[in-house]
Image (cartoon, rainbow, N blue to C red; front, side, top):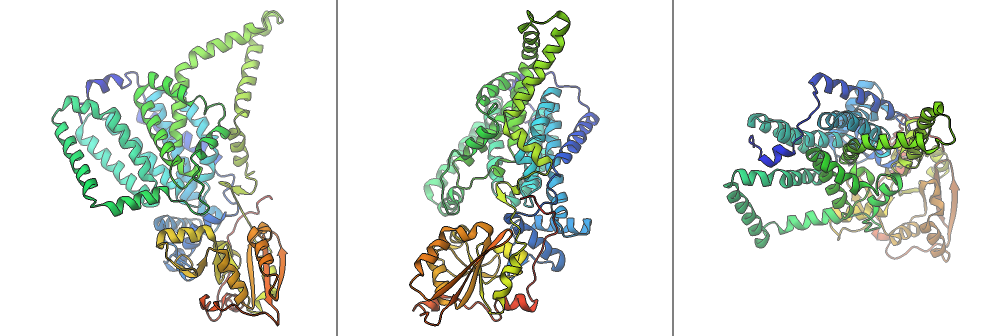
Length: 580
């Protein structure tokens, strides 16, 4: 590994900038500060639903060293929950700001710092500046950095590990330093993998880069390595033929292709996102990739393979969300920086001269230069405003998030207690499709009716898992089929279904009203600020179905009794009120 193949020596840039450690640190600090300023506009905004999965266990950890949510345990990314609890302790409050600053915002700014410093090191100041602009005005980066989940931390761990692999194989000649650096990269990858299993896709992309760029040179320089390659291939074939790991491979494939209800099989999701947010840059991506590879092969190939591999694999995978590309999208920006730096001198001269001469017959000589600059400024502004990513990023920096984060609404159930109060005295069964939101605003619930999460339940626990099984995350029964919800309504004398504000217009509510017209059921539909409630009461002539014994024992006291007695209290989150 210390003696790189001659091919790779030729491909390595011979004109690296004279970048000292001090210069790199200064560049990194400047990029970090700029990124930090762009990633605090929503720091105190209310939480979206998914963030409560991490916030509530963190509160529990700080208070009693457990990850309890009601009677359940949510210990996914437990170390990240512990980091949030540590942030609570440092900042002295259990607020949205405290949950975001140290665990997410600082790692998000650090990712920008690392990528920009690396871009400067391997390609120069123009590439670094272009990458910095892209990263600062990156909607996904701004949102993930203010998202109380593990993606920001996972992203910076992966990026740091990937860059260490690059440094080990390209910058270092000493085998000892290479091994130490690769070991450090492996540790970072493992930490990232502990937070998010999709890290494996990125690590695989790094491995593919090593395989395509370095392995051929190693095999030519050390022919005996072919024996090792043959042995590895023989072992892999033997394992596949024997079926020893058939169950594990089946599980991996199921994990890769699984998505919660409703299944979309949307292979163009990421393409549409780039097309809509970067309409100038996405269609030209293959062109700039060719230019970048020709201009500066090693870093360009690194960026291209990491981004393209994860983009393609995740496009054909099950779960889709733009945050899943967060760890490798920075390399898309750096690739553009490398390509633009290569063509910038020629393009700049052409545009500057062309702008001055285009209207020369109408302008005096003294106005040619100012006019050229005006044209270039207008052209640059047009380029920026033609790409929605830059406009949306500016709004996010200013905290104008349209009450959403990563496409999900920041619902605030400010009237939920008022809507629910008249029903509690009658010991109404509390059903919700927003379990964590109910814990936040009400303090408790009896039954979760949530089809997407029930489909996840079936995936993780087995397809024969019966309805009304206890969800380990909350300790409450969970259903996903409308028939089970209707059975609950028909078998329970008094109850409510509480959800987000548009919930009263949900097709399932309309269907419930239609399917129970023959029953002596009286419904009440109420809408408050951010929440809505559908209540029901049995009339005197209501007859119960024969299969009411399928319903579980919801406990004594039920959620209504626990709320009234103060045994269950709302887990309110201190945050600013979002604009609606």
